[in-house]
Length: 336
Image 1: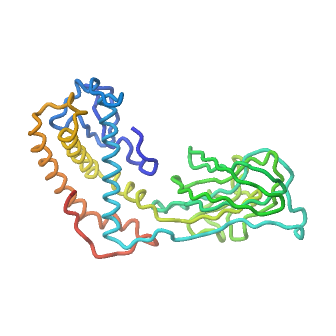
Image 2: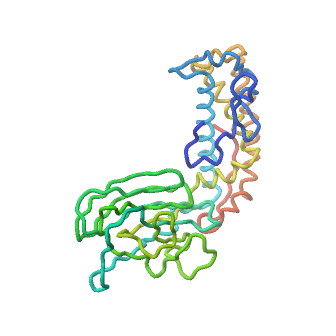
Image 3: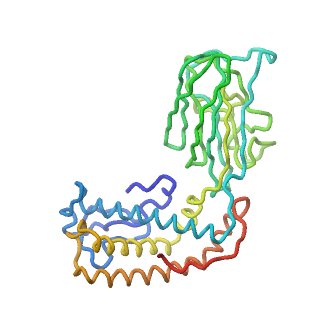
């Protein structure tokens, strides 16, 4: 089951079945859709909609419900607290000119660029890459690569020899460490440097000055971080508060949240039975009984949502600081 990348910390929160009627699926919470009343997975493989069998349809339902519940809690999060999005905006990298001596580096192969690494202790913040600037003696299109964990994103920048050019990135990084660079195999790049406030290593626990209050910034060359050079690039970025990441981390490890999602899956299944026929091969109750079952799940959901609402304040206090300021609390009463 592929949860949206920014919600990966609660992937596999709920499973379809524990192997009794289908291939074993992982459930971090120990809760399975197959344990909800009124669902029979024996014939699930025969339930097909658009060439998806019943197991795949249920996985998709779980994925949708998790995303909805996280979004719902994120809204509640903002109701309880005054929040900020952008808490810092920075541009790093300075060019050398002819007055500094040799202002262009010789052509050399290898991935080089700028690395931004969030400091430890910023679990609710994220890096948004805004714009990259480049200065070379080359004209033509080249590839700028964003490396965000295991995810690689390529964008094309149009170079003009002897002039600074720019490329809008507008990329919200999922991981705490993100790189923006290029292969300079056929480009003579400006001998640009990390400005004097920049630090040299993501591994340092202490340093003097930083291009960012919340992140360490350095050049990199291949696997080597902490470089003083930025290889013809300047980078504009923001440090932002990431609300889905905060809610995910606070509640993704809370067993009550997993049960809330389980109840929501029961509600969604009953709604699907009422509104469509795609789950017909998996139902064990009469059609009218699912409305009663939905009311049961709704009552359980509302009661637990209220409990989570009362306990939310203490959990959110761990995210306090530049992102969060206290507001008059509003009690969660249930899912509409």
